[in-house]
Amino acid sequence: MGKKLTDAQIQHYRDFGYVSPVDAFSADEAGNYLQQLEAFEATLNQQMGKGFNFKPHLLFPWVDEIGRHPAVLDAVEDLIGPDILLFNLAVWPKKARDPAYVSWHQDSTYFGLEPSTQVTIWVALTDASIEAGCMEVVPGSHKLGQLHHGEVPSKDILLSKGQTIDVPYNSSKTAFMPVKPGQFSIHDTYLIHASGPNQSDHRRVGLGFSYIPTHARNNGSTRLTAMLVRGEDTFGYYDDEPRPRVSYGEAEQAFHRDAVARFQRGLDEQAAKY
Image 1 (cartoon, one colour):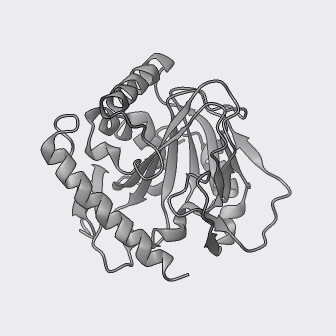
Image 2 (cartoon, helix red, strand yellow):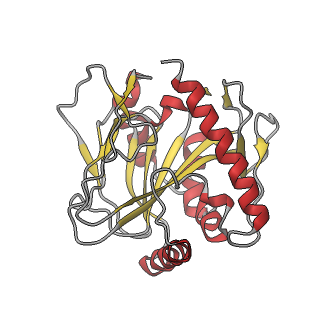
């Protein structure tokens, strides 16, 4: 038995590459987090999304709080050990009745991590049903390793580069991972997954946290940043990310700009290898 996950859940993750759903906090707490997100969006008169969705844990204490939630980190520790870095975080909103979708891809594609032992925790702030465009996965596909991706230019693909698997694989059997507010799903960095358009009448909002063990280094030439969220880091492969003291403060914005710029350079460098 793990800290959070049962032995059966851990084995399911090893065999099939995912676990869902897992409880983290209440629906009321999820609603409070959503209110803080939407209050910020209203202040800027801009919704978070493609091109404006990376590393908000550097800007807002409430996002940092979710990323360090014991239920989340206990589940991550069950899978990758006690020394944990938050490598990246992206906000994944889908407007109601909108054609936007996420194409079939693997999270590992442009991260350049060695070893690729990254775990994604997708935390729901609103209901993410099948109708609302929840995640769909190909069970067991994480065992295929890294597959080649092409880049599909489309305003409707929510991935930053439109990365889409462009080699054959068996997709005859898929599984959906619906999650309710306050729940999360877990998937392996190599798991093939996608999500369809939101056909519901409400906005679908989730946060995708990418966690890695401290011994996983980036093989690119750009020195990236990461946040130690549990345990200790004796490797020093990344520049430390400071926790935000205030929401959207000047110091927080300055570090966020630098961290995201480095992350984008890292993505570009990895994409150029394809």
